[in-house]
Picture 1 (cartoon, one colour):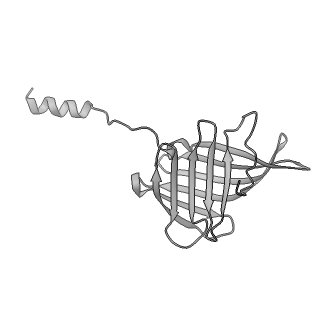
Picture 2 (cartoon, one colour):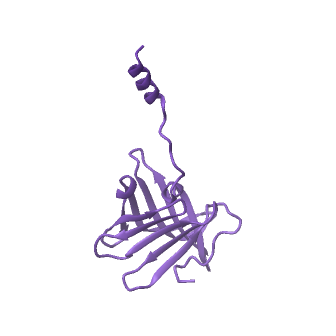
Picture 3 (tube, rainbow, N blue to C red):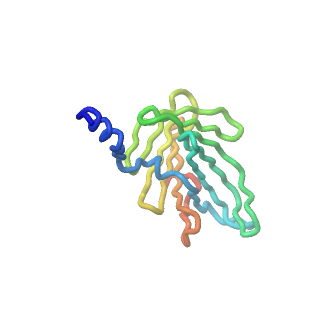
Length: 168
């Protein structure tokens, strides 16, 4: 075998080196928080994300009552993250509203920040991992205010509270 053939075989066998996961790699799964207690039980907010076979991340934001007998949760918004690297795009479709498109402006191991590419609210959406057991989400609105939620994986004994969206 010639030298070029050996080099070609070595290059084919070499696996690409993958870097540490970014914040978006850690989104997959369900994230929940308890907003408040009402007569029927606790009000919950959740974001559920899954990776599709084509590489997209699809998500759903739900809010409502969670009970042992069954959930009564309404969809607030649907989300899709598609593309690669710095060209990642987020599409946010609130229930009963028009869709808003975003571009990724920052992606680190702990934080992913999306900024609106046109009109629409929220203007900025930020996902920040605070350790293995907490995801902080911030929506910067067009009026200058912001809404914030702290999520945890389901099954935690002490679900995150104060996730009603008000600034803390």
